[in-house]
Image (cartoon, rainbow, N blue to C red; front, side, top):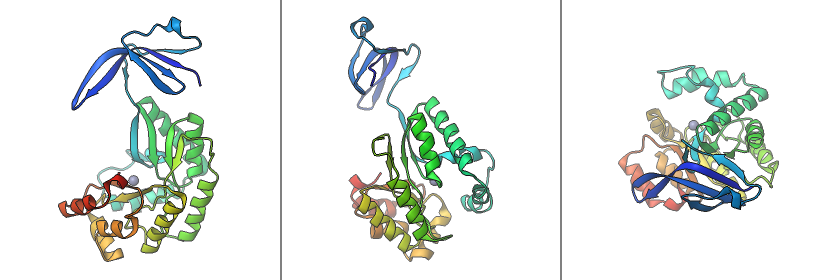
Length: 268
Ligand SMILES: [Zn+2]
């Protein structure tokens, strides 16, 4: 791995709640930051990759904690509809027509867009994930990938097999790509699907990444399907796994209290 010297950048310095921007040089050796100083002389280092960051901010890469990266090709295709209408009438029928090549190209396009705006890690959840993995591997972006699980519209065993096959065919040498077990949502997964997701997460020691309370309709649908509230479903199935909840925009104060009682070290 070549050492990197970033010269003349504007570095963000965090001090409690204050952020200041200062001109600094940064030396990266063996993939780790070794020095941040006012001036570092490039002549002292051989074979260093020199980057002139004049007029640029130098900061840690941004992390996108929830995406369906290939879906960005649907951006602005529809606006001003409810989540359920958007999913059932527009997006899912359109996704049925996507080919492997579409997903590879869409993933490429979206990853390049992410990198160009400073996002270096993406936690994704999408079908045909081999295509997204291929694009992420080629671009060397950090990605957290999965084959989402749901069973209200199909066979859970078949999807679990797809997940296992996806996970087991990973490149163990590539530590830029890691994995989650990802039941789609509490309103699209039966209790059996959630139970099997938790079992898989424990078997492979992976986090669980799930949509949670992203729309008002979901609150009632979860109650109808599981006979309990969303946070009670989380407690029942996922109290002993690392949990990544996507959205969570319709949490009540009571929900927040229940989540507080769960082990927050295990919740993102
Ligand atoms: Zn989502």
